[in-house]
Length: 423
Image (tube, rainbow, N blue to C red):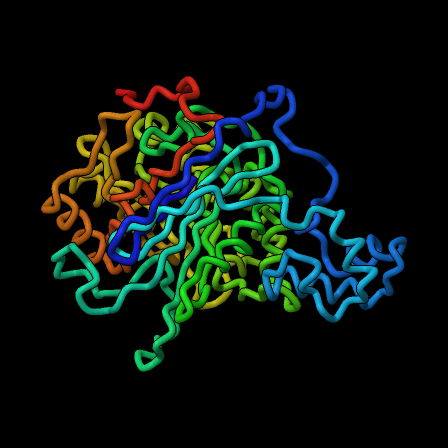
């Protein structure tokens, strides 16, 4: 899983707890995938045309339904006014609005919103809306190296400062829980409960847009919420194709970033399937195999030398960079010696570096270094010629910051499967 951050409009909204009566028995361990059947929000226009045919629909109705759902975020067939009344009535039976619902919303003091969303079986995940902050006065960090760019939606384009529209980045989840077991991340403490389907992944964006303020616009989507996106590869790829579909949400591939802990075969597949156009972020977090394996068990299967070779072979378009995410954990990977090793490890790669002082989680006594240590680490990376940003603490007051998204609802209190204080 990869990190993100969040917050609110200066107040905390009342949080509605998920109804305990909706909790159901966990699915059998042998089946982590909900169903092989394509969910309604995962259908393309052609898929919809095939579904609507037996209901009396014509081929062009498939495109109309797709646009209502994905371009306009309308899930109530009665509002799809350019469809025949008989077809709207038939659509009512297909459960468009049942894929995912918002169980609660928490607002941070910096305008970030964390949404707890509930799926058909009572499972819940968290997704976060992160409004872009003004360029001036937005950071708590007095680093002389911080150029004010908001790395949550960093692009090579200049922002039109005169535009009053507030651009929002949404951080979405791809799994219920996580199997990767990274010690600084709350999502994987209880392990992986089940995979999310493509329609559940996309539904987070559809319902998230319904919670935007009138002056806000969804600008970027980052797959950095709960779960390892590439461990749920097929559903993730279908979701990416739906998010970028020109008749739907129509996000540019440049506006989407997939974060991975380092599943090398899937990194190679992602590069081939999208020609490198989808943004790639690597949760690196250490510069030697011994340290990284303690922090991130996946390193035992795909050690650093294998991962770095995959990054060097990744088909990046011109002027694009891979994002390197590096969570600073006090006493583990935060020394100036580690910063120098990081510079050496990244040599020759087109990258930018996001430093993330570890956010506290209940399951661990690990924590971040002091700010002087963070700035010293950053200076070494910057002096070596790399763009290096310190990830702002967004939404930490509502446990929405990097690494803090956690299982709740029917999985709340699940027995920990990760020993987070590995020495």
